[in-house]
Image (cartoon, rainbow, N blue to C red; front, side, top):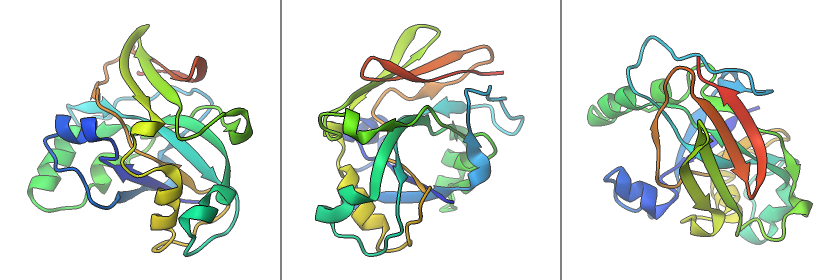
Length: 203
């Protein structure tokens, strides 16, 4: 199982990071050891002084696929959730400045908390879903999937050119503006519409 992540997939997030709007998806990977399930707490690591949250819609692949066309990509998933792409921003900035990969800043243990998966069939339109993150009962991040630069089907088609998609693979689809720091004893609750799918503590 692999975790495929998309960077800078919302224009407002690209602007807040002072990055150009991408003309094709920005792709990176996390190992399966990054997954944090069942609302277990995330423990702040000692190798970074700037751990930040990025709230994202996550798609679970449900069948084997390679070279998938966008018009058929909807057949390759039937469950979604919300996840947090936890990022060591200081390491990312240092590595990016040196032209080095992002993996140390993005793929460390526990850096991909996952919420409860729900059927796509319960959604009117996956390309028009509101989601948000609250930290300590304060809204810190809000987005709608209609604001993605590349929608879910386009992302599945793109990544399947390079990677064979397998049942259980996860696709983190990018974060909107509003990313920020995590602190000890923060309580994170992520909502898809008005349904809380993820609720965990920072330790």
